[in-house]
Image (cartoon, rainbow, N blue to C red; front, top):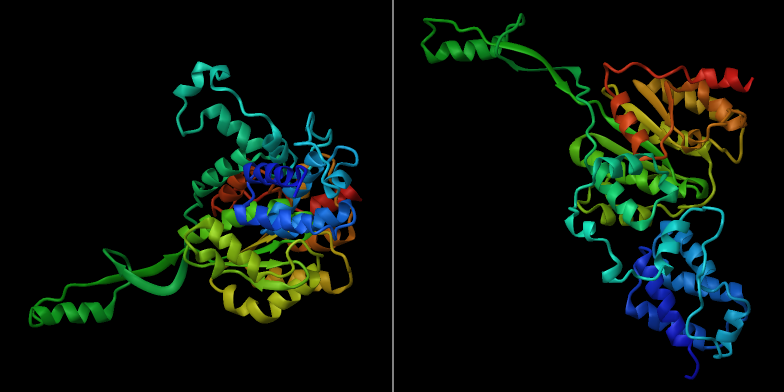
Length: 399
């Protein structure tokens, strides 16, 4: 083979690896063979051929799209490659003007590495811990605009989040040192040790446990950039809490509770991605809620459960079933919290018909687009925290 086809594909694979995609040498060989066959006609065929080889996870599609546009943006470059007459490596002088999902990670992959002599001396004194200013900046940055390094640091901060001690009393009892309720069985057993000559009273009190947390996560195309980070949050919560149930939905409902119990977060999300065939597809909120209320509601919503509904509320097929299913879900749990990334916009108004149908049936309406919003969510789950503003106020603003 003549020309620079193999070198260009290797450069492109190297850039994808820097951007965070899992691209090995075997994938590079497959890509060179696929392009070398000569059966691909145009730019779109090359795009999807390399996409099928290099993209192994749903969440990497946005980064691949940005990297492909940056790398192959020279005019008629792909046509030249197909003719095996392309230059060594196309340039990437500037990133797209509009910041899109994955654009920052793709732009960093094409940036030239800094020389060691150009690095400031202060960098040698940095530790692995984030400074206060770094933490504050990272907390306010939108998940969709984070670089690969920032996403890695955000995952570590998410693992450090602590849920409040929102213990609730149950009908079961546990031994207590003192109290007003006597435990007859333990009292009689203690009296037998001394032959019944002296009766030592034993007490009991209601047992307190953490209420179950049930998460319903929208994994449609409009929520893909945020759903993966939120699943990292659920994985961290699953390690700390015993009763955490996670579901994802797009066009159908999928239970991923067992997948998120894997120790490694990347392995857990990979298992969840394989379990959900409708990742980055359409949205059918009403159908998913109906399946949950019918099959899973009585199984997981006992003991004063808290439901976290993670969706933008943009229902494709709106009918009269959505308000009914939302009302049924609200009546089955102790607290229903709606987490919507659209609240990151200052000019957000509840004008969409799906959002207006869901708002009257939730207890709290919160944004979930950065680390600060996740920390606020943890604080809001405390029983002593003040309840957020009435979600129905958004309906009054839109009206």
